[in-house]
Length: 183
Image (cartoon, rainbow, N blue to C red):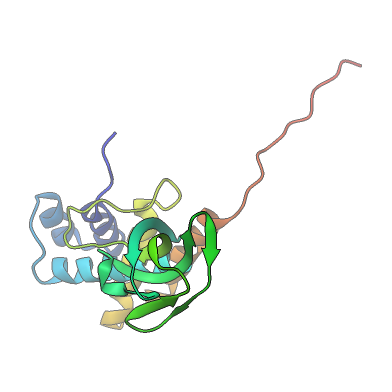
C-alpha cells in the first residue's frame, strides 16, 4: 500500500481550490517553487496544528541524567511536552525550563515526551495513521492558502477542515445490531 505524502495533500488542496496548473505541476513532480513552496509551508502549519492540538505523537527516550538535569537539545525533534521521567520503574518529579528539565533522578532514565513531526519536503509521508486523511490535510491547506491570500472562501475551507478533524477525533462506539428473532 502506497503511503500518502505531503505532495498528495497539496495536490488535493490545489484541486479543491481550482488551481489546475499548480495541481498538474505537483503531479508531474515539480519541487516547491512559488505557490508550491507556499503549499508546503501551509502543510507544515496544518500538521503542526493537528499534532499539537488533536493527535499527540509520543516517544520514549533513554537519557543519562547528570546532576538532576538534562538538556532539551538532546532530542532529535521539537519537544512539545515532557510527559514523564521514569527511573527504575518509578516516576520521578520534574520541572521543565525553557532549555532543560530539572528532575530528582540521576543516571539512566526513561523520558516520555510528545513532539512535532518533522516535515522538510513534499515527499515526506504524512505522519498520522488512518484517522487523518490526505483530504483532511488538503482542506486545512486550502483554508491556510485562502486566509493568507485574503480569499473569501477561507471560512468555508476552515469549516470543512474542522468538521473532518471533529469526525476523526470522535470516539465512536462499535455499532451493535441486535439479534433477530423469529416471531
